[in-house]
Image 1 (cartoon, helix red, strand yellow):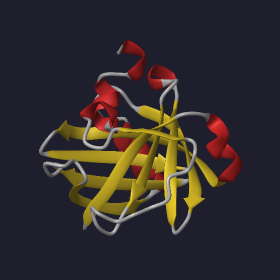
Image 2 (tube, one colour):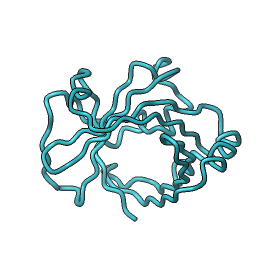
Image 3 (cartoon, helix red, strand yellow):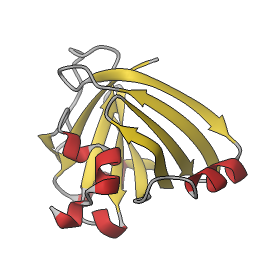
Length: 155
């Protein structure tokens, strides 16, 4: 239940050539306080409820619990969320033995593209594709819960 993740900006759209899946995601927050976030997400035709704890000092690890819920329930819960629902397309791109999840944001966050990779340990080595840019792991400005309240277009 511990998520270990690194986050990077993306330099260009060339990752799309290697993507093996693409899904639209709408997500909102029932709670977006730093100590715990409670997220509702619709990804494709599936609903999810996710609870995340605060990140550790490095920003690499935190508690995460996720449960698939009925699509109708997710749609209704999105209506209860705090203002600032996130809309994005997620591309999954294989790189070596890992998969990057690359999010291309829309609406108030349009122009932002962020790649995330989940790891088994904080020191795990992974291949960095050419399109991968600056690392922003631990920078709260790139957390979706932050973007929902402080959109990229207003920075």
